[in-house]
Length: 628
Image 1 (cartoon, rainbow, N blue to C red):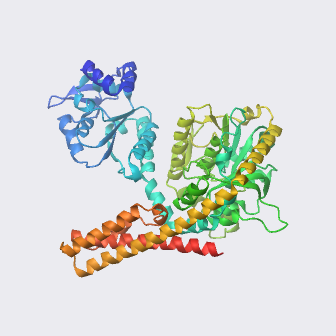
Image 2: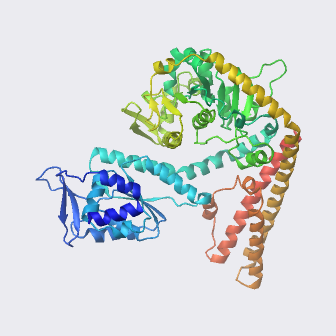
Image 3: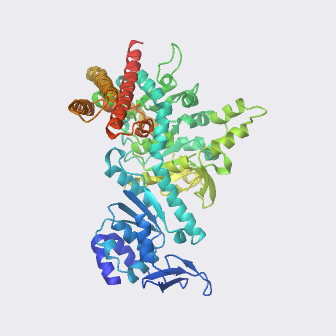
């Protein structure tokens, strides 16, 4: 049985076969193979020789049990937690689904190969196996997402072998971490939709107000790899509680590193007389802009996204020194901004893992350093703290506190709002984190895997924060052992800025012409989509009122809707026009018709009305800003 299965494994899953051959089959006496009533082998875990044991599969008919579990699921992506002897996996493999099998115990997988004929599971070569590596699920889901364009991949359905997943405390912790990663990944679309619904109009207003920044601010592409071959390290200051640990070392760190600060951490550095070389700000909200309000770093460069709150980018009043020495744009995260940038001046992309810290770290990587040292990147709440002492959040909490709502109440709300849970810390202990922060941690873990293929080394100076595979936990003394290079850093940046100014100013006339053409194309495209959508919505409404019956008149109406849909799909501005479009699920909740044809027309009316409103709002905002 082992030789037959191994031959299949070698031909279909070569790397997995190499791993399994090196794995010693479990000789743990607690694992007992028994023969079920149906004659198929089953597995029992006995803590002691005389204990009744924990059944991993049915004692009567494990094959039928596996088939019954598989028949109860109808999903295009299924994740099986706990392989055991493979009965459920074998039954699922016969369906037309994407099957991901996750098993913590590699020796149990070998035990199954030695005792069962798994030809039907292995021969097609379509199953994805994850053994022992809990972090691999994030990579697999990310790859699946890329394989399904437009986010069409279905949310995975999880099947658990509960006996295996709760066998020991270690097993439960391991599988719980897997489930957390899956649920975090699955909830991203819901989070993004809710965020868009809440802030979409704000982003659109900001983009319209900042649009001409595409002309005046160079892109971060000019800064790509400026540290390559220099061995210069980068120190990244995030705003977590562990940033306080760096206070005694900041001046010495400044002598040795390029300093990058997230916007929320700038006031901490300035409080101790340290001006960073770069400040990263990409959050469009007003309250986020307040972190930079009256915080002047005239020798620093601001790295911004074109949707940031507009006052951050405006020129200061006469005789007022600028808050920043210069401004660079990264590629817009939104289709409205990208439409203009792609046609006039490409800025250069940065990673968007959902937090300014992810973008700042990706910018640090963009510079091409040999190492990135991070502080304040806790991704958790060590000692139940949310940010460094003296952060704007803390000041606002104290300023707004009162007898019946003290600052501690706001802190508790912050700790509880993101579905908190205890997780493993970088120093091996336990620390409070939440679903939102764990999503960022998954992003960093994936990026570290990519960076491992280069010479970049990532160090964490946050031992009490969340453990992130790929970050080496270090102490400040190790960083301070590096040579002082501040003069060299300043000269390098001075030379880089001088060259950037020459290149960017040289292309101003060409860039202005391209910008003008792109802006005009954007307005015409939005007007065309608005008018097409309005006409299609009106036609669908008339069809509902006249009573759709499948006649020739109705067929003509359906052709008209198809024609409008094709015109919209072919428009180069369709993404910008539909940016404020509500989720399809929200539209479907409003449907009342039961007849299939009438229901289709009702949905079409809602769909095109929403698209018309989205395009019309964007147009009005753009035209209003152009007249200011």
